[in-house]
Image (cartoon, rainbow, N blue to C red):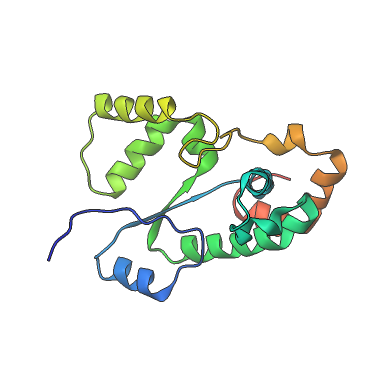
Length: 171
């Protein structure tokens, strides 16, 4: 039977069942990635707000403690983007020029979307962007430059250099 379209949000690895679904044309995938240093700050924010049953975020108690988990996330990103099965979306580009990125995604999905529809999508999204609403954090780019100390930035750049550069970000 046919249930219609649905969205699955995954933060983990490209697992075989998802890979098969995309390969067989039963699903279409996009993958959004962002600067690992900003990922750390976002995850630390989530950790501070998490209830006691969200063990995942306990790994983000400090910048230093977050690095191994963010390395794993970057390996997952490389796996997803290297699979050739998904359309990669750089979070920086999405925030900087949402209309262009929505248009790219709609083309990837084979949808004809009018400019007025794109504007409406963006307008509705902007209205729901209150921090903490619908899993939205701050959405700020290069937060790490303002919120990390010089030593914390140096540590991240040293420990995550390969990951940062492979995702197209600068040290």
